[in-house]
Image 1 (spheres, rainbow, N blue to C red):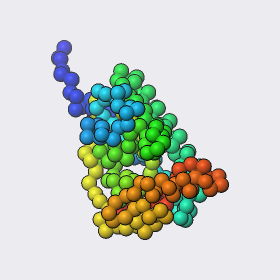
Image 2 (image 1 turned 30 degrees about the vertical axis):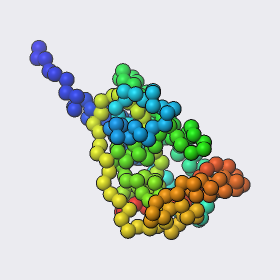
Image 3 (image 1 turned 135 degrees about the vertical axis):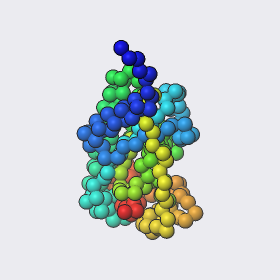
Image 4 (image 1 turned 180 degrees about the vertical axis):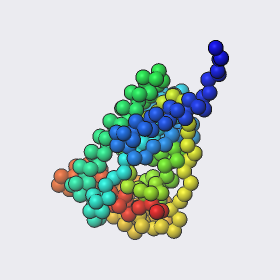
Length: 231
């Protein structure tokens, strides 16, 4: 009987195809794989130890409904709030399912919550999903600091699964906002400028929106609406 050496590149491609197909079947519309090393500086202390030794980050995104996003006029709407929460739930369920498939293969996996705040003062999660998505080739970081996908713009939300399962990784995305200024013109807080993004101004406006009847959380959606990508 012939003996064949294990081909890690072939295994990585097979594993990726299997996970991507499973993700698409449960509602994921954007899928990429990042090498984690350049993104580790964006990990919060809450996850650094448990993520030690994990090499890959699977980034999964769900496109938001244009009909809901287009209804945002200067402030978040009640239906956007519900859509935001529903998409986060779908992302968390997808991450759990993919992590389970990885564990069944005998590898380690951490499904990182799509929207769990671990530092309330700085409004930080366990890691930056948008940075993982960037290194997974799904888009570039725009002027608003949101991820800009060429097709869907900023109209998507993301979740991450960290793993040591061997996967074929993508390259960081190429692209830029170019001469586009739509988010600068739309931002109700004046937090997005040519010089950069002022997080403090953004947070103050989010606090204001959170006090509106029925909202009760830090959401906006105005710059999400403004950014439609490059195509």
